[in-house]
Length: 279
Image (cartoon, rainbow, N blue to C red; front, top):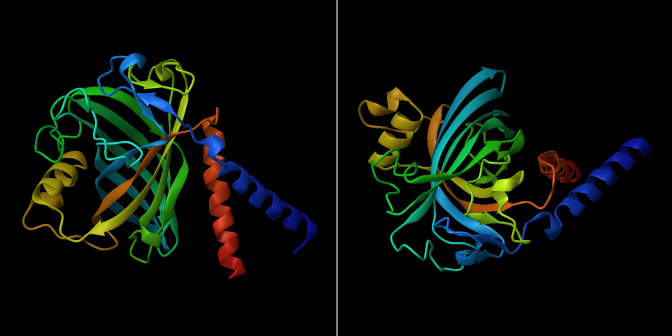
């Protein structure tokens, strides 16, 4: 290895280590699930818990490459894994999230997102997993719209299924006005609807062998518009389409520019590749 290559590798490691520092994660921000402002907000130490299901469609694009579309519906019932369910001021309500994303990948390698949209809703009645709307996840008040940034992703096996315990990352941004006023406040108490915000989610995604009837009808048929799933008994088709369950965390970043977070993901990916080569 040449000196310049060694220097570049060292810089990548230093950048990855620095980017992983906790300062890049927004701590002690506030979230008011009713939209009532800072006074009634709940202190969030670091993240919102998310769980749910997603339908993945793969399309081979030549060689071992593929493109994919992902449609998911997620529920958010607490923060920081603290067991204190919210929204606390209207029992029975919930926060839900929909994901409509796409990207590219390599069978037996990795995948990345190239775009998409994340939408977050506040609903006074918990309708998640029902047939209301789209799996009950797009009901109530739209409180946040995030644009999925290029990058993130994870590793997959030869049939496109997530590996490494399904570790998947998604980077996103919300421009000024894409968050509804009265819900989100940064650690300085500023309403985040007035700011450009970068967010990211880390989840464990694992294949669902037998998705429920509602998941098939609502997520695959209604959300993804995948008509083959609507006729007869549904079964995953490895390498073509399948359901995954997701359990993870949604965080905001203190990094001012979304590109910095995207580079953070690239740096970590490069560091992982280097470690694999060393082994």
